[in-house]
Image 1: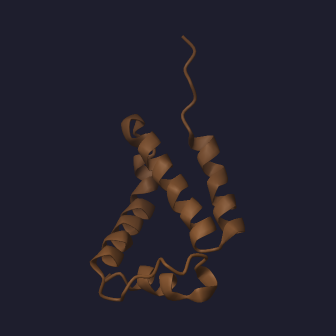
Image 2 (image 1 turned 135 degrees about the vertical axis):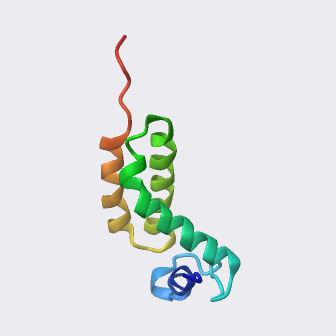
Image 3 (image 1 turned 180 degrees about the vertical axis):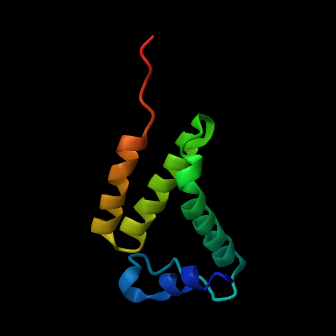
Length: 95
């Protein structure tokens, strides 16, 4: 809850394509990222059904999984996790 997950994953050389992005264990930024990710993952299944915040939730998910793919080096996992966003993107209504 203090941001250790973000800090530890940023310091593992195997999961870090860009060595410049590293967080300290007691970093406020790591703690904020930790809570943002937790809230997103917990609330996404509920908030995706509200049309006003659907696109921002999907865009945040796309950015997050692109970071997982290219920032952390888990390219195949990040790309696979992007597939559901294609199906969740709101379709244009025919008038």
